[in-house]
Image (cartoon, rainbow, N blue to C red; front, side, top):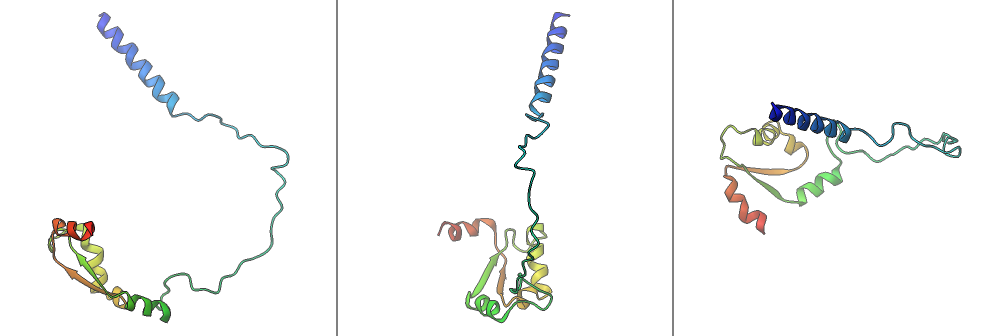
Length: 121
């Protein structure tokens, strides 16, 4: 009976410590009077640069930079077995996404151990 009481106390203390560890230090933030007087700005910022990729693709400069980068060799991790890790690359190649981005991607079947010398440099 004493063993059961000891285990109950240990369990109760563990739960209490766990709950105390999940709490925050302070529930109300402290602010000074000078912090609450922010002036709103009415200036709007506009960018004329294209932000990444649009429906029409990429800019001619970015396309040329991608072509200049050369061929990207993608070695699969599990040959061409049905693996979730290569789905996005296979779909992108089949749908022509790489071509639209002016990227030449060479998808080759491989195994994860074949990548070790390439990563090691």
